[in-house]
View 1 (cartoon, rainbow, N blue to C red):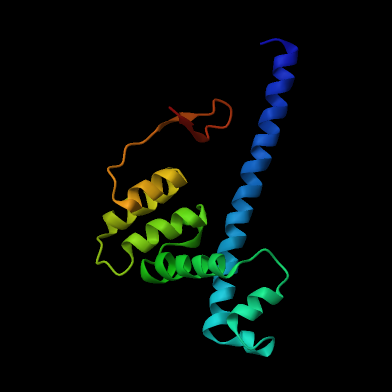
View 2 (cartoon, rainbow, N blue to C red):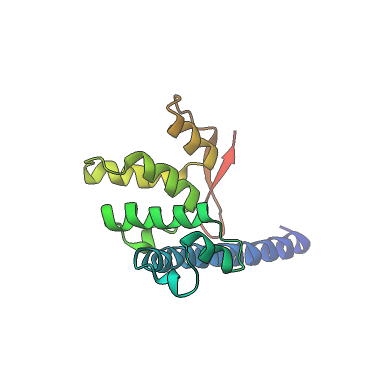
Length: 158
């Protein structure tokens, strides 16, 4: 590898690692937010600020929609409370967690079935999860490859 390629690879790897680090923090912060929102909603603590849960969410002046707050809370209720999955294992895309979680909630699943569902949320793309949820026959449209520098696995579309 010549010097220019090496510098390019090092810079790409540095920024790639930064994206991975920040993404993990975002997922952790969203999980923390889910727990906080659940306590506020269930304890009706929002009434100190606004009359309704919806008006409270609107008053936050953030991009937190009612539907996304609902998904965060539902994810916590399903994965954390119902299936007792530790938070550090749930640093997964919230939309995929919600889709898979709503498919399995209330079912008397074995631990292996819960693990399989969690693995689907972790590894499938959003469109693959939607296809799985719709009941259509699922066929992956990607393959997994591993970064030679950091060993992180990536999906590559076929």
